[in-house]
Image (cartoon, helix red, strand yellow):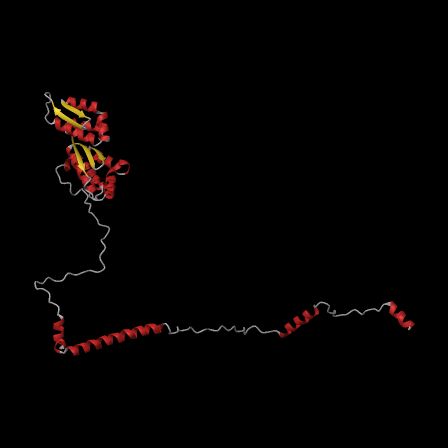
Length: 317
């Protein structure tokens, strides 16, 4: 919708630009189509192809100021489809953002090195510029979609740009100056725990397993009577039943086996040998305690004086 809106707004400018090359352009809003055709005054037969490319660029949301440059000589355009190069949508979005870079810095560096205008829109990348630059842009875009970081190609382009300035190196090979970036697989594939080894190929089929009759013939059971065979089978069944019964009985008896008790260790508090009891000091403490009891007489008792009225009673008597 943005491309159609852009074409509708700048349609007079498009008609004027194509009119200079004597190309007639008609816009059909009902069908939603644009047609370009030559006129009697058209002198350049390739002008029709350039007009077609102009409409393609406008449909890919390229601004008119940049798209009109396609009508100049030595200018070409390339619309690279990147939608089908990556399987999952999440990887596609990440790699497309990697091509643009933070705040469009990677795309701007690519434009400066290739002298091209690059526009990333949806599932396509529109490029406009000289032929040599378009070749480099396509290589960088396809490598980015193949999980090769664009900074490697940008670094190579910067070295080539510096080498082209030297007239002595123009006729020499530049391979010794260009860096060789090798792809390193950092995440190693997890090896399975159980490795299966293939058997050696043999043209002969494998040996067939022995049948029940062959086994009986080998042991001699085939020639026994039916009654003997039955008796032998019954004995084998009884032996198996006895083994199963003994195992079950052992499991039942395990519940009645008492667990082993740990020996109880008695703690004995030994009196310290170094500390000696002072009996005299204990006796002195007991004496002091007795004297401090309530109502106990003092150590030096004061003699009591009899009242005077007792003497008078004695005299009267």
